[in-house]
Length: 242
Length: 263
Image (cartoon, rainbow over all chains, first blue to last red; front, side):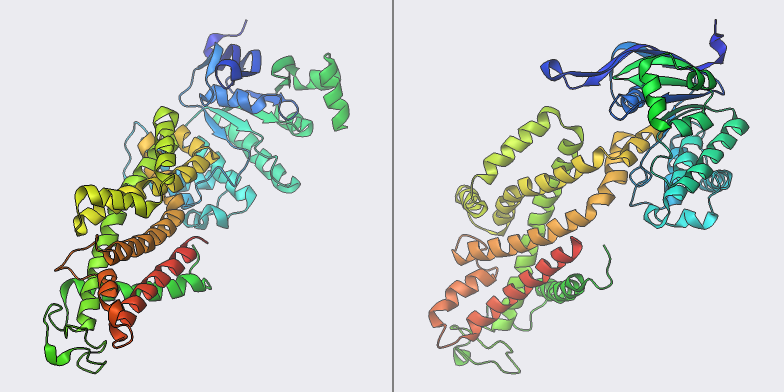
């Protein structure tokens, strides 16, 4: 039995989809899992299988039709796939990073906010000079660092990462993954790490779930799934990535 | 909006700026009384004392054009504040929240779009009666749907973008997302629509005044000046030429400005 204290996220028999009435199109079927504190859980599956829908349902952007989502931490955060669309093009990076601090319960003065923004920028390896620039002046890797900083600045413990490195080239991928792993260790974060790339999942995750057509068909420790895949779909995925 | 090398914008800003100064000046100052008649100056040609010449009653055309453009500016600005303001607000809210108010607005839009705008304005004027405030009201109402539609379509594009989701996760309220996060990103389109709307208002006002149902005396209007002076177009071309020229420059300037904003 898993100790309840250690959980940060519990998803129970979740079903969700888009549209209403006769146009309803179900995407997720009976998704059931939990995420422990300090764990990196991978979610793998081909495009269109419902990975992103799952993350959107957990965050409340898509309503759950059945089942429930319980998180035991304040405000789960998300790192988006497209680092070009996830930052407001009309605002400077420093302003964007400050925005989450404006809605905290703890009221901060402008100076305190700026201090925290600078501290967080340093933590994610972002040059202070970049805070005065617009997102369009930043590279993909730098933008993704900004996204990571946004997700962490309110002190969230649970981060959903929806293909956070898929839009980046290989060397930058490496850097962002190392950054995420370093931060996870330092702050004892929990990640739900979504990817279609099995190599990335292998390097990042403790446990992995395989999703096919909205159902989780197999889950377990990464080593075990990669060595002895049980479900035929998992085998297909693994063979395709070799 | 990049200002450098955007010649439409540069030319538009300078031309619209000059016309703006002209119009604003017309609201407060004219060299002669625009209503003062002088038989001795009837059809006087252009001179230093009267740069645009004088009309059939010996009134100074320059003063009348200046005052008329002031009136035009007043009407166009009023129309934009009423039609553009309300339309933009409606578009923001219906685009962002969707649902039945959105449906209702769009059907109402279709209804209004089915009539030619100027015809609809004429209907309003025939109910309300002529005069510059009624022109503002009529044109303002006619302008609401087009602004609502432009802003709505932009808001719909932006509200599904990841940066808006990101803002929601930060804990931003809906009003803050709408006015602080989305609105600044669609201001280019909005400015462009406002500049085009200004042109349409200028032309509509001139057209309505030309027909005699727009701005009423004693307010001077370039549209009415054109209709009064057209009988004397060969004897005294100045009193037709100059009001027409000013309207053309105004429309050209704001049209270029609109093009420039849209890039």
